[in-house]
Image (cartoon, rainbow, N blue to C red; front, side):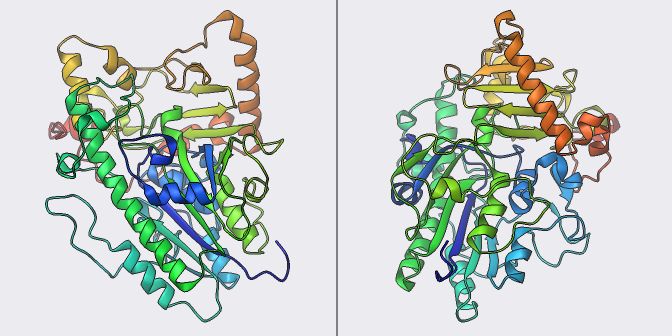
Length: 485
């Protein structure tokens, strides 16, 4: 970035549980504004979260660190460590002269005040404006675009800004039928993943999900309009993405491509050649260093990621760098509901062709125990239908969505994008599997993962700050009730 150039603004738009934007070929969801960002900027096909649940995914974004490096913040519904433990990019930008804020869902869910932080790790909040959602809808009443206008009005003269727009959509619950009432039809769904039954109830559930993504996208468009009216869009790095995959069985919270490989589009008219598709493997740990570098600030030494400026500034499409060939993911405790309310520890390595998964506790159920209703999977009509089919003797989708998993999994992403055919025990892939495990183990050691040093139980000792009506303890006490679907 030339020394004489004005420092750019940053508009970071993050949906809550979205796997689908129209620009990725999904015709059942209309996202003209995210599509515009892709058209006038770049579309990433291999952007990965570090952990497939909201709070830990967002913790990696604000810190630039792998999920297992984040102590309590590796878990869902946690106490976020204080500023003496982890810096966050919002504080660093504010110290560097940026006007910083957020609206909607920032980092969370959890408690960020307990350790002395005075504002959300995503930045000070701008949340005062409310609007009336569509009749009968579960859409958030937060006026995201109105709050962005208030944020811009509060900006000191001449200061660049960084704004986090965190939509609460398409997080559940939904209002049944809101997609149909919006004019969508079940046949609009271009494809139902093979691990859900291709039935009307599932397609309607997907339409309700699409309706909520479109609400999120509408506010992206209103924010772009504000920047154009101010003449500031050209010098604004705009990113539109999601924190993890869609809130359906075998996706949200699980360790497969359909969850942790996310839609991600970015434009910066002054600096980025438009219309490109980027295949390099990138990670959410790369966002904090990107924001700091474009702001002209030093990269904090805690940060494990690498700025995306090399990718954004490259020419052409495809693999545009020589070194972005690996992504690493993990998880510990998400939502409680197993015996002892323990987590489900997993670590993964992704290459351009392969996904290797190491499940450290294959004796546990990955989506939570059956007796507590699989609490690591959001309640939905799709979930209810998968369980209903299981009770009638059809275990195909149930096994894929909720069944126990082996210690090792290996998938050829080129021919198996949904990760259905585990090749870990195929003799001809033994050398590859061992190589990937060695790479993963080396990265975990290099980055100080307690799990690889035999200290992984520490993640189950951290406080869970969410409500626990479906925890194992409530089940033993006799006051557990099935989840409502």
